[in-house]
Amino acid sequence: MIPSTMCAARLHVIGGNFQIDQMAVPSLRPTDVLVRVEAAGIVPNLRNVVANYPTTRPFLPLPKLPAVFGLDSAGVIAAVGEGVSGGLRAGERVYVNPALSCGGCQACRSGEPNNCPDFTFMGYFGFGRHSQTQFDAYPYGGFSEYLTAPAANVVKLPDNISFEQACRFGYLGTSYSGLRKLDFRPGQTLLVNGATGTLGVGAVLLGLAMGASRIFITGRDRTRLENLKKLAPERIDVIAGERSVASQVLSLTEGYGADAMLEALAFQAPAAKIVDAINAVRRGGKVVNVGGVIESLPLDPSRMMAQQKSFIGSLWFTTAEGEELAAITKSGALRLDVFDTQVFPLTRINDALAAAGSNGGFSNVVICHREIESA
Image (cartoon, rainbow, N blue to C red; front, side):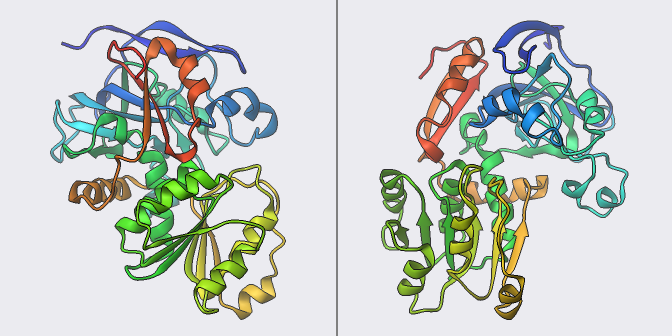
Protein backbone atom coordinates (compact mmCIF):
# COMPACT_ATOMS: atom_id res chain seq x y z
CA MET A 1 0.00 0.00 0.00
CA ILE A 2 1.27 3.44 -0.97
CA PRO A 3 0.34 6.08 1.63
CA SER A 4 -1.10 9.44 0.67
CA THR A 5 1.35 11.44 2.79
CA MET A 6 5.00 11.16 3.69
CA CYS A 7 7.75 12.82 5.71
CA ALA A 8 10.34 14.96 3.98
CA ALA A 9 13.20 17.16 5.15
CA ARG A 10 12.89 20.57 3.50
CA LEU A 11 15.05 23.67 3.45
CA HIS A 12 12.95 26.79 3.98
CA VAL A 13 15.63 29.48 4.25
CA ILE A 14 19.04 29.81 2.56
CA GLY A 15 21.67 28.89 5.13
CA GLY A 16 19.08 27.54 7.57
CA ASN A 17 18.51 24.10 9.00
CA PHE A 18 16.37 21.45 7.36
CA GLN A 19 13.01 20.73 8.98
CA ILE A 20 10.74 17.71 8.81
CA ASP A 21 7.44 18.37 7.00
CA GLN A 22 4.42 16.28 6.10
CA MET A 23 3.82 16.29 2.35
CA ALA A 24 1.70 14.49 -0.22
CA VAL A 25 3.29 11.47 -1.87
CA PRO A 26 4.12 12.58 -5.44
CA SER A 27 1.81 11.63 -8.28
CA LEU A 28 3.04 9.17 -10.86
CA ARG A 29 3.23 10.23 -14.51
CA PRO A 30 3.09 7.76 -17.42
CA THR A 31 6.86 7.58 -18.05
CA ASP A 32 7.94 7.80 -14.40
CA VAL A 33 8.60 5.40 -11.58
CA LEU A 34 7.69 5.99 -7.96
CA VAL A 35 10.53 4.96 -5.67
CA ARG A 36 10.27 4.30 -1.95
CA VAL A 37 13.56 5.75 -0.76
CA GLU A 38 15.49 3.45 1.56
CA ALA A 39 18.70 5.51 1.78
CA ALA A 40 19.99 8.88 0.60
CA GLY A 41 23.59 10.02 0.62
CA ILE A 42 24.77 13.26 2.19
CA VAL A 43 27.01 15.23 -0.17
CA PRO A 44 29.81 16.78 1.93
CA ASN A 45 29.43 20.02 -0.05
CA LEU A 46 25.68 20.29 0.56
CA ARG A 47 25.92 22.69 3.50
CA ASN A 48 28.10 25.00 1.42
CA VAL A 49 25.70 24.75 -1.52
CA VAL A 50 22.55 25.66 0.40
CA ALA A 51 24.29 28.45 2.34
CA ASN A 52 26.49 30.11 -0.29
CA TYR A 53 25.70 29.15 -3.89
CA PRO A 54 23.04 31.85 -4.43
CA THR A 55 25.80 34.39 -3.77
CA THR A 56 29.01 32.69 -4.88
CA ARG A 57 27.68 30.63 -7.80
CA PRO A 58 24.41 32.14 -9.03
CA PHE A 59 24.98 30.41 -12.39
CA LEU A 60 24.26 27.13 -10.58
CA PRO A 61 20.66 27.76 -9.47
CA LEU A 62 19.02 26.12 -6.49
CA PRO A 63 15.35 25.09 -6.54
CA LYS A 64 12.77 27.52 -5.21
CA LEU A 65 12.36 27.19 -1.46
CA PRO A 66 11.03 25.39 0.45
CA ALA A 67 12.67 22.47 -1.33
CA VAL A 68 13.47 18.81 -0.77
CA PHE A 69 17.15 18.09 -1.39
CA GLY A 70 19.01 14.77 -1.52
CA LEU A 71 21.21 13.96 -4.53
CA ASP A 72 21.99 10.24 -4.29
CA SER A 73 19.00 8.01 -3.59
CA ALA A 74 18.47 4.28 -3.53
CA GLY A 75 15.33 2.33 -2.81
CA VAL A 76 12.60 0.10 -4.12
CA ILE A 77 10.25 0.79 -7.01
CA ALA A 78 6.78 1.21 -5.49
CA ALA A 79 4.92 1.74 -8.77
CA VAL A 80 5.57 2.27 -12.48
CA GLY A 81 3.75 4.58 -14.88
CA GLU A 82 1.45 3.11 -17.47
CA GLY A 83 3.85 4.09 -20.25
CA VAL A 84 6.88 2.37 -18.69
CA SER A 85 8.07 -0.76 -20.40
CA GLY A 86 11.37 -2.57 -20.68
CA GLY A 87 11.16 -4.76 -17.62
CA LEU A 88 10.99 -2.30 -14.72
CA ARG A 89 8.62 -3.61 -12.06
CA ALA A 90 7.43 -2.75 -8.59
CA GLY A 91 9.67 -4.33 -5.96
CA GLU A 92 12.96 -3.91 -7.83
CA ARG A 93 15.95 -2.41 -6.00
CA VAL A 94 17.32 0.67 -7.78
CA TYR A 95 19.62 3.66 -7.61
CA VAL A 96 18.11 6.88 -8.95
CA ASN A 97 20.39 8.87 -11.25
CA PRO A 98 19.40 12.48 -10.43
CA ALA A 99 20.61 13.86 -13.78
CA LEU A 100 17.66 15.58 -15.49
CA SER A 101 17.58 16.93 -19.03
CA CYS A 102 14.92 18.39 -21.31
CA GLY A 103 14.74 15.42 -23.71
CA GLY A 104 14.10 17.58 -26.77
CA CYS A 105 17.25 19.62 -27.51
CA GLN A 106 19.91 18.58 -30.00
CA ALA A 107 22.16 17.21 -27.23
CA CYS A 108 19.38 15.07 -25.76
CA ARG A 109 18.29 13.82 -29.19
CA SER A 110 21.91 12.97 -29.94
CA GLY A 111 22.16 10.76 -26.87
CA GLU A 112 24.17 13.27 -24.82
CA PRO A 113 21.75 14.29 -22.04
CA ASN A 114 24.55 15.54 -19.80
CA ASN A 115 25.27 18.24 -22.41
CA CYS A 116 21.67 19.50 -22.32
CA PRO A 117 21.55 23.29 -21.72
CA ASP A 118 18.94 22.60 -19.02
CA PHE A 119 20.93 19.86 -17.28
CA THR A 120 19.87 19.75 -13.63
CA PHE A 121 20.56 17.65 -10.56
CA MET A 122 17.31 16.56 -8.95
CA GLY A 123 17.53 17.34 -5.24
CA TYR A 124 20.60 19.56 -5.58
CA PHE A 125 21.19 22.38 -8.08
CA GLY A 126 20.95 23.14 -11.78
CA PHE A 127 23.24 24.28 -14.58
CA GLY A 128 20.93 26.29 -16.82
CA ARG A 129 18.47 29.17 -16.82
CA HIS A 130 15.56 26.76 -17.23
CA SER A 131 16.57 24.43 -14.40
CA GLN A 132 13.52 25.40 -12.37
CA THR A 133 11.39 23.70 -15.02
CA GLN A 134 13.20 20.48 -14.21
CA PHE A 135 12.81 21.07 -10.46
CA ASP A 136 9.08 21.63 -10.97
CA ALA A 137 8.77 18.33 -12.83
CA TYR A 138 10.77 16.37 -10.24
CA PRO A 139 10.67 18.35 -6.99
CA TYR A 140 11.57 15.57 -4.54
CA GLY A 141 15.12 14.61 -3.68
CA GLY A 142 16.22 11.73 -1.51
CA PHE A 143 15.39 13.44 1.78
CA SER A 144 11.79 12.29 1.35
CA GLU A 145 10.21 8.91 1.81
CA TYR A 146 9.09 8.73 -1.81
CA LEU A 147 10.22 10.39 -5.03
CA THR A 148 9.37 10.20 -8.71
CA ALA A 149 11.99 9.90 -11.44
CA PRO A 150 12.06 9.23 -15.17
CA ALA A 151 12.13 5.49 -15.79
CA ALA A 152 15.26 6.09 -17.89
CA ASN A 153 17.09 7.31 -14.78
CA VAL A 154 17.01 4.20 -12.63
CA VAL A 155 19.89 1.75 -12.29
CA LYS A 156 19.00 -1.77 -11.20
CA LEU A 157 21.03 -2.89 -8.19
CA PRO A 158 22.44 -6.39 -7.83
CA ASP A 159 21.98 -8.11 -4.50
CA ASN A 160 25.61 -7.55 -3.43
CA ILE A 161 25.14 -3.75 -3.34
CA SER A 162 23.39 -2.45 -0.23
CA PHE A 163 21.23 0.66 -0.37
CA GLU A 164 23.83 2.48 1.72
CA GLN A 165 26.62 1.53 -0.69
CA ALA A 166 24.50 2.55 -3.67
CA CYS A 167 24.39 6.07 -2.24
CA ARG A 168 28.05 6.34 -3.34
CA PHE A 169 27.11 5.88 -6.99
CA GLY A 170 27.09 9.63 -7.62
CA TYR A 171 30.78 9.95 -6.82
CA LEU A 172 31.75 6.54 -8.18
CA GLY A 173 29.84 7.15 -11.40
CA THR A 174 31.48 10.55 -11.87
CA SER A 175 34.94 9.04 -11.49
CA TYR A 176 34.00 6.11 -13.74
CA SER A 177 32.78 8.40 -16.51
CA GLY A 178 36.04 10.35 -16.21
CA LEU A 179 38.08 7.17 -16.57
CA ARG A 180 36.09 6.23 -19.63
CA LYS A 181 36.81 9.60 -21.21
CA LEU A 182 40.49 8.87 -20.58
CA ASP A 183 40.08 5.73 -22.71
CA PHE A 184 41.73 4.01 -19.78
CA ARG A 185 42.78 0.43 -20.49
CA PRO A 186 44.02 -2.51 -18.40
CA GLY A 187 47.76 -2.42 -17.83
CA GLN A 188 48.06 1.36 -18.03
CA THR A 189 49.28 3.65 -15.26
CA LEU A 190 46.99 6.21 -13.64
CA LEU A 191 47.65 9.37 -11.65
CA VAL A 192 44.82 10.41 -9.32
CA ASN A 193 45.42 13.98 -8.17
CA GLY A 194 43.42 14.52 -4.98
CA ALA A 195 42.99 10.83 -4.20
CA THR A 196 41.79 11.18 -0.60
CA GLY A 197 38.56 13.07 -1.43
CA THR A 198 35.21 11.50 -2.32
CA LEU A 199 35.90 11.50 -6.05
CA GLY A 200 39.53 10.49 -5.63
CA VAL A 201 38.87 7.44 -3.46
CA GLY A 202 36.32 6.26 -6.01
CA ALA A 203 38.82 6.78 -8.82
CA VAL A 204 41.42 4.65 -7.04
CA LEU A 205 38.92 1.84 -6.41
CA LEU A 206 37.82 1.94 -10.04
CA GLY A 207 41.38 2.11 -11.34
CA LEU A 208 42.12 -1.10 -9.48
CA ALA A 209 38.91 -2.70 -10.75
CA MET A 210 39.66 -1.67 -14.34
CA GLY A 211 43.12 -3.23 -14.34
CA ALA A 212 45.54 -0.37 -13.69
CA SER A 213 49.07 -1.74 -13.42
CA ARG A 214 50.10 1.16 -11.20
CA ILE A 215 48.23 4.06 -9.57
CA PHE A 216 50.00 7.19 -8.33
CA ILE A 217 48.00 9.00 -5.64
CA THR A 218 48.32 12.49 -4.18
CA GLY A 219 46.58 14.15 -1.25
CA ARG A 220 47.05 16.31 1.82
CA ASP A 221 46.30 13.65 4.43
CA ARG A 222 49.17 11.17 4.67
CA THR A 223 47.18 8.73 6.84
CA ARG A 224 44.40 8.47 4.27
CA LEU A 225 46.94 8.07 1.50
CA GLU A 226 48.51 5.16 3.37
CA ASN A 227 45.05 3.63 3.94
CA LEU A 228 44.47 3.77 0.19
CA LYS A 229 47.83 2.14 -0.48
CA LYS A 230 46.86 -0.76 1.78
CA LEU A 231 44.14 -1.68 -0.73
CA ALA A 232 46.84 -2.86 -3.16
CA PRO A 233 50.36 -2.09 -1.85
CA GLU A 234 52.09 -3.52 -4.91
CA ARG A 235 50.06 -1.39 -7.34
CA ILE A 236 49.65 1.95 -5.52
CA ASP A 237 52.41 4.55 -5.05
CA VAL A 238 51.95 7.47 -2.64
CA ILE A 239 53.14 10.81 -4.04
CA ALA A 240 53.68 13.19 -1.13
CA GLY A 241 56.22 15.53 0.43
CA GLU A 242 57.92 18.70 -0.77
CA ARG A 243 59.05 17.45 -4.19
CA SER A 244 56.75 18.16 -7.12
CA VAL A 245 54.26 15.54 -8.28
CA ALA A 246 55.79 15.59 -11.76
CA SER A 247 59.33 14.92 -10.56
CA GLN A 248 58.23 12.01 -8.39
CA VAL A 249 56.06 10.32 -11.02
CA LEU A 250 58.69 10.78 -13.73
CA SER A 251 61.30 9.28 -11.41
CA LEU A 252 59.08 6.25 -10.74
CA THR A 253 58.42 5.70 -14.46
CA GLU A 254 61.99 6.17 -15.76
CA GLY A 255 61.06 9.54 -17.21
CA TYR A 256 58.06 8.25 -19.20
CA GLY A 257 55.20 9.62 -17.11
CA ALA A 258 51.72 8.37 -16.24
CA ASP A 259 49.50 7.18 -19.09
CA ALA A 260 46.46 9.06 -17.79
CA MET A 261 45.43 11.43 -15.03
CA LEU A 262 42.14 12.00 -13.23
CA GLU A 263 42.06 15.44 -11.63
CA ALA A 264 39.92 15.36 -8.46
CA LEU A 265 41.19 18.22 -6.29
CA ALA A 266 38.62 20.20 -4.30
CA PHE A 267 37.68 23.83 -4.97
CA GLN A 268 40.12 25.36 -2.48
CA ALA A 269 43.21 23.77 -4.04
CA PRO A 270 45.56 26.07 -6.01
CA ALA A 271 45.75 25.82 -9.79
CA ALA A 272 49.52 25.31 -9.56
CA LYS A 273 48.89 21.84 -8.09
CA ILE A 274 47.02 20.84 -11.25
CA VAL A 275 49.66 22.22 -13.61
CA ASP A 276 52.39 20.37 -11.73
CA ALA A 277 50.45 17.10 -12.00
CA ILE A 278 49.78 17.61 -15.71
CA ASN A 279 53.54 17.68 -16.21
CA ALA A 280 53.63 14.14 -14.81
CA VAL A 281 51.57 12.81 -17.74
CA ARG A 282 53.37 11.25 -20.70
CA ARG A 283 53.38 12.59 -24.25
CA GLY A 284 50.01 11.90 -25.84
CA GLY A 285 48.39 11.36 -22.43
CA LYS A 286 44.99 12.61 -21.37
CA VAL A 287 43.86 14.54 -18.30
CA VAL A 288 40.20 14.49 -17.26
CA ASN A 289 38.97 16.96 -14.66
CA VAL A 290 36.16 15.92 -12.33
CA GLY A 291 37.30 18.18 -9.48
CA GLY A 292 36.13 21.59 -8.37
CA VAL A 293 39.18 23.89 -8.36
CA ILE A 294 37.87 27.39 -9.11
CA GLU A 295 41.15 29.17 -9.87
CA SER A 296 42.01 29.65 -13.56
CA LEU A 297 44.70 27.34 -14.92
CA PRO A 298 47.86 28.95 -16.38
CA LEU A 299 48.24 26.29 -19.08
CA ASP A 300 50.75 26.68 -21.90
CA PRO A 301 48.76 25.73 -25.03
CA SER A 302 51.89 25.51 -27.16
CA ARG A 303 53.43 22.97 -24.80
CA MET A 304 50.16 21.00 -24.63
CA MET A 305 50.12 20.94 -28.43
CA ALA A 306 53.76 19.93 -28.77
CA GLN A 307 53.27 17.05 -26.30
CA GLN A 308 49.85 16.13 -27.71
CA LYS A 309 48.25 16.21 -24.27
CA SER A 310 44.51 16.65 -23.79
CA PHE A 311 42.64 18.34 -20.94
CA ILE A 312 38.97 17.32 -20.76
CA GLY A 313 36.16 18.32 -18.42
CA SER A 314 33.74 15.61 -17.29
CA LEU A 315 30.48 16.19 -15.41
CA TRP A 316 28.56 13.35 -13.77
CA PHE A 317 27.70 10.13 -15.62
CA THR A 318 24.95 8.61 -17.72
CA THR A 319 22.48 5.98 -16.56
CA ALA A 320 24.15 3.56 -18.98
CA GLU A 321 27.45 4.15 -17.19
CA GLY A 322 25.62 3.59 -13.91
CA GLU A 323 24.47 0.20 -15.18
CA GLU A 324 28.08 -0.64 -16.10
CA LEU A 325 29.17 0.41 -12.62
CA ALA A 326 26.59 -1.92 -11.08
CA ALA A 327 27.82 -4.76 -13.30
CA ILE A 328 31.45 -4.19 -12.29
CA THR A 329 30.40 -4.31 -8.64
CA LYS A 330 28.32 -7.43 -9.16
CA SER A 331 31.39 -9.16 -10.62
CA GLY A 332 33.35 -8.49 -7.42
CA ALA A 333 36.00 -6.39 -9.17
CA LEU A 334 34.93 -3.15 -7.49
CA ARG A 335 35.11 -3.06 -3.70
CA LEU A 336 32.49 -1.06 -1.82
CA ASP A 337 33.34 -2.36 1.65
CA VAL A 338 36.04 0.23 2.33
CA PHE A 339 33.76 3.10 3.25
CA ASP A 340 33.21 4.42 6.77
CA THR A 341 29.41 4.40 6.70
CA GLN A 342 27.41 6.39 9.24
CA VAL A 343 23.64 6.05 9.12
CA PHE A 344 21.19 8.64 10.45
CA PRO A 345 17.39 8.67 10.52
CA LEU A 346 15.67 11.45 8.58
CA THR A 347 14.81 13.23 11.81
CA ARG A 348 18.54 13.81 12.42
CA ILE A 349 19.37 15.21 9.02
CA ASN A 350 21.09 18.30 10.41
CA ASP A 351 23.37 16.07 12.50
CA ALA A 352 24.13 14.06 9.36
CA LEU A 353 25.13 17.22 7.50
CA ALA A 354 27.56 18.09 10.29
CA ALA A 355 29.11 14.60 10.11
CA ALA A 356 29.60 14.53 6.34
CA GLY A 357 33.20 14.33 5.18
CA SER A 358 34.62 13.64 8.63
CA ASN A 359 36.83 10.86 7.21
CA GLY A 360 37.57 12.41 3.84
CA GLY A 361 36.74 10.28 0.83
CA PHE A 362 36.19 7.23 3.01
CA SER A 363 33.16 8.89 4.65
CA ASN A 364 29.74 7.66 3.60
CA VAL A 365 27.08 9.52 5.58
CA VAL A 366 23.61 8.27 4.76
CA ILE A 367 20.03 9.16 5.64
CA CYS A 368 18.02 6.00 6.16
CA HIS A 369 14.23 6.19 6.25
CA ARG A 370 13.92 3.20 8.53
CA GLU A 371 13.47 4.05 12.18
CA ILE A 372 16.99 3.52 13.51
CA GLU A 373 19.52 5.32 15.63
CA SER A 374 22.81 6.53 14.13
CA ALA A 375 25.31 3.74 13.62
